[in-house]
Image 1 (cartoon, rainbow, N blue to C red):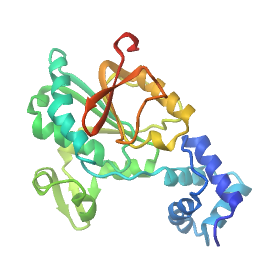
Image 2 (cartoon, helix red, strand yellow; image 1 turned 120 degrees about the vertical axis):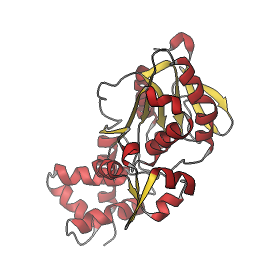
Image 3 (spheres, one colour; image 1 turned 90 degrees about the horizontal axis):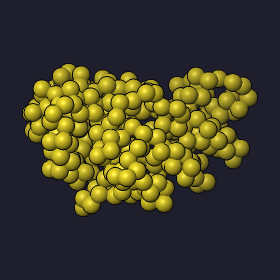
Length: 277
């Protein structure tokens, strides 16, 4: 049974209300694709039957599963390459020099999905910045999906997921082979703190961040939600800290208090000095 327009509109409204994600008119196929596993897990004959059930009665747990399934994004180790080169060559050395007196560094992967991004940052710090071994480095990773956070904490990935970005050298240094793939080593996994944070709802109290990664997330929100998220980011970003967005994302015409920083092939932003907070 194909998804009716009424059921599509119901899912779209629920997704917008609960996560801020803005589902376009032609994305009914995406609803069917992403909710099929949820429907099967709960013994519904189709995605349409699943949505009809939710339309007819309140089931908060099931609705949360639906929203999480729809909000899952793609990720892989050292995604797109260039931003991590900029982090290694320029951004992290600059931040380390500026924080050398306090020996403290706060980094937030704000939509971490299954964990490849924060683990990439942890591996980058361990491989290229041994000085940080004596520092208080807080690497926070958050996501809307509790299921993705559970998977990220385990740090277990298939051969295909590993092959997408993690070199054999880094894999041998920071991973261990398992029957069902590879697991990131315990000492790397312990460096990442995973938390459930819905960017569209009030945020918990956070420390001032030196670096925030919010890559390929804003593209899913409407303009008011994007502006709200950027306003909140201004409050948790150090005056000289960095915000990293996806390659196709910008703060232009959304929040002019962010200033793009020129790194070829990477979308970094900083707060304008006279409006830092």
